[in-house]
Length: 329
View (cartoon, rainbow, N blue to C red):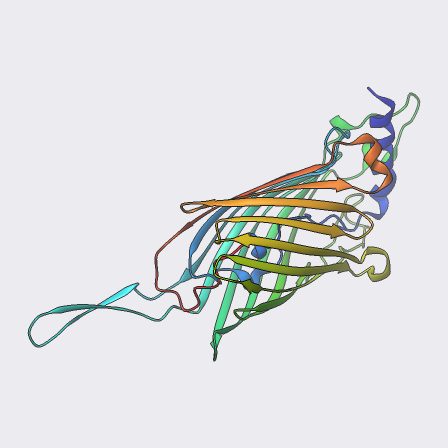
């Protein structure tokens, strides 16, 4: 066992007494599947979408964080077409107006050293169509997940006997809820979401005596689209994320993407005090495939090959949509 791995595990164990749910999944390609961070995006594009995201952080670093998420979302529509019979028995197919309710959910599994978090989240969104191709959306999600300490992966120096491993709870079940709101037009969008509304107790330790609660996390996103002719779109965007520990946890992603014919895109992002991210993607029929590589800027870069993130989406349904511009990643 390498010395670096021992140091990593010891560091994680040192943090256990004050663990307050600060680890929240990080996504470099949050625009591709925004409802993972903001439930108000659930079903916003009028399509049924299946998604898979795999993120391997700090490759080659022992016990590095990893995230896996499988998602589903849809818009509850009226019938795609209404069949009317005229006086002469001629059938007419007429598109209906889309519904306002979005439903979705996802399974997730996060790993960080000997800490594991696995759970399910179900989301509901209500979309209000406004004048001039605008949409205001509200979302709420309920989640239930398990925190698990895998002590079999702990490596301790000889002679060290830590009571946290021997006497404390190793499995915790937590229910919680998230809220989000978003606003979209053809040229710009903005959203805000809050997680861990219940501030559920992360009772790793003596559960009956541990009164610590999780931190709430906050995500503020926004972006604009500039149409350069009929084939090109330039989209700068920003995401500000923080927690209840505002001054210590605030971080910003500043991103620019370029789309060509809505089938190909390239992007560059800067995450403050953390990484530079390169992104690329393409659309093949109903499938959207996106890849991101994070160049780590912190001191840990000497021990890692960077972070890889792959997102694959499959979208179904040819329903007549109110806003056809909600179809770009």
